[in-house]
Length: 264
Length: 222
Image (spheres, rainbow over the protein chains, first blue to last red):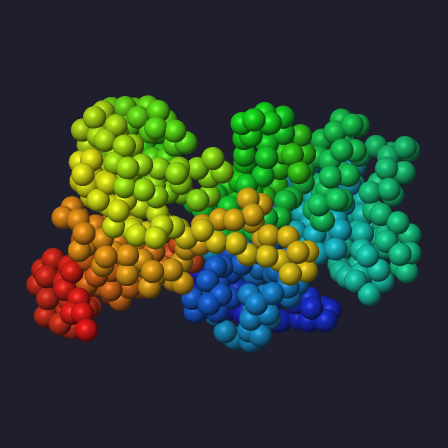
C-alpha cells in the first residue's frame, strides 16, 4: 500500500561533504516497507523543482516507525533537500516499487554494492541477519578511502565484510566483484544481491548468470512519477527482440529485478 | 484492456482512451477494437513526440490530421477527440483538419519537443535524445494556442498543459477550453485533480458564478 504523508524530520546527519542521512517519522510507510522499496520526496513545497526525487530506503526502525534514507547532493533537488531542518515536515509517497529483495533462509549470501549503491543494501543485510539463518558476506566497493562510508554499520549486519577501493587507498585494492569471484572459488554463494554503478551491476549480472547463481539487482533510473504512470524509467527485458524491444519499468516492476530478467 | 478497464470501471467516471499508432492503418485497427469496448470516448493522439517512429507526421498539417481523423471516424461511433501537437507554426490548421473530418472535439496541447544536455557527460539527458516537455513551464503556450483554436473551430476544446491549480484551469477556460485535463501535475501531487476542482469552486464563489460555462472563452482581450 502506497502512502502519501507529511513525515517529520527527526534527525539529520552529515556523513560526508555531500552525503546526508535523514531520519523521518513515517509509521504507516515503515509498516508497509520491505528492503528494496523506495520513496518519492517532494523536496520543497514549490513547483520548482517540479518533480519529486526518488530515494531508496536505508534503514527501517519498525519499533519506532522511523525511516532513514541517505542521499548524495547531486543537483538542485538534492541541494534543497539537504537544506531542510529538523522538525520540518517532508512530503513523501511510499513505499514505492513492486520488486523487493527476497528475504528468506539461504546458506551463503553475497551482498555486493558500490558507492552510494550501498544504501538500499543495509536494510536487506539487516533483515537477512536478524530474521533468517543466512550467512551474510557484504562486499563494499568504493573509488577511494575518502568515499568509504558506513563500514561499522555494515559490519554489524554481516558475518563477513570485504571493502575494496579502486585505487587501493583503503581495504583491498581493486573492484569488489573481483573479491566476490575469488571467494566463489572456495565458497559459492546460493544467492547474490547487488546495487551500485552500472558497470558493477553488469559484471555481477554476467558472473551470476554464467555461474547460474540466483541474483537480484536493484536498478536506479531517473523517474518522474514513481507509480507507473509516466513510463520514463524503462529498462529492457532480457532476450527482448531487437526490432521490437520490450520493457519493464523500474518503479512498477522493480527496482529489484532478477538478474536474468533485465538487459542493463 | 484486460487489466485497466475492469479497474477503471469501478469508478463513477467517464473513461476516454488515448490512442496512438505509427501508421493510418494502426489508428484504424485500434479504433475498430476501441469501438467494441465499454468506454466513453477516444482521444486520438496524433502528436506524441516520445515515440520514435511517432505519429508526428500526421499531426502537423491540415491534410494529415483530416486524413487520419476521417478514416478513424468511419469506424468509430464513440465521441472522438483529436489531440493536437504544439510543434507547428499555426495550430489552427490541424485543428480545422480535425473539425472538418468530423471530430467531436480537440484537445491541446500535447508536449513540446525539447532537449536537455548533461554538461558533464556532454550527452543528452534522455535516452531518446529529445522528448516531450510538459508541466507548468508550457502553460502560457497552451493558453495561447487554446485561445487561437477557439477562434478557429466550433467544436469544444479540452485544454491542457501545465495545469496544477484551479487558477490554471480557469485561465484555460477563459481562453476557450470547455474542459481541462491534467498530466504532469499528477506526478507531483497525486491529489492534484481534487485540488484543481476545489480551486475552480473557490473562483466561482469569489465571482458569483453559477454556471462554469459562463467563463468559457470569456477572456477580455486588450
